Image 1 (tube, one colour):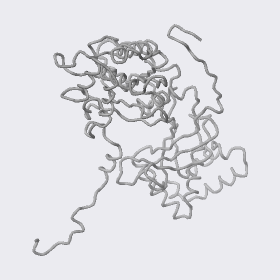
Image 2 (image 1 turned 60 degrees about the horizontal axis):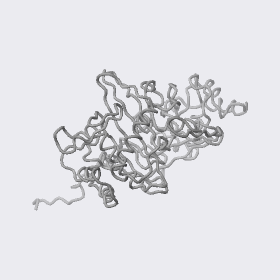
Image 3 (image 1 turned 135 degrees about the horizontal axis):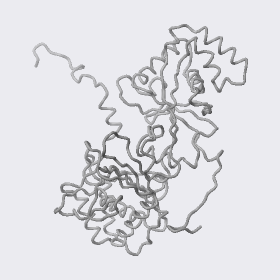
Length: 437
């Protein structure tokens, strides 16, 4: 149907088929992460295999409480790691690590997160982290989609044998044992006869839904994450107005570079933002703007127009210097001024598939976690040349920006983990001579 801002499409989704059926168990604290190898060794010493211990984790995750009456019922557990074959004792890293890269996931055929709210929840968690699904302060008057997270307590699972006082309630509220009296009686008898020292051995894990990457970011040509602090009056801009202003700014930039290309429509632009929960008077707005991939327009040209938009938004060049006039504030919709900072810019790699790559925008300030344009940067000079005149020769700017030096990129999580490991003494294997020659 046709609307004021353009055509609108209604899609009827099947609640049973179009759902996400995964949840991930994450350590509740560093102590729980370090205790997983110790707990695994205890169970393997008693004769349990790794598959049996995974089944016990699945059974512990099926027990709900009064805060989660209609809880999700997992059906299987699996482990995976991007570094190679996964091993349960080291899936959360060893004691010398501070972060873990492995995943302990639970699967089920029943829905965990509905398809209608997946994009909204994935976009919020992509910007603010998974904690924003439970601490919903700041989502009331911001540019979020209609479906917002509901404030519910976080699900914490205890992997371990319950105490004798809690055995009856633990068995009663277990969804896998419900409905089978024989299993209930046998489980109650076995848990009550467990030694007291084994009842004290346990860890706590947070159960969070696996949302994956937001489809707005996954299907976009370019994605811009921004942050803006409002110290005076809060600018309450609705999401439709924000999309309309961004679309108009994209068309202005495209007319300078490639005037023959088709104009951007409002359905080509998506945005989501929230107000970070803080106790100060200054409110920090964090959000994400995506430009959808257009099959009938060269992808590189749309990416460069999006990079120009990111440069206008995060331009912190002081007044009077070269390029200080190329600014645009997404909240106030004013040119030659911006109080916004760009934290990350990612672009689509190919026309097919969902592989993406970060685009450097000047120099990355690790302390403030943002891109800055202050100083002499070759990429910024080429972008300013592109603003004056855009042609196919200027597409080489994108390849040069993709091949930027490593020092201009955000820190890599894997290298941080490797730096935190306890390295061996380099002089350990060198034989010591008596004369020290």
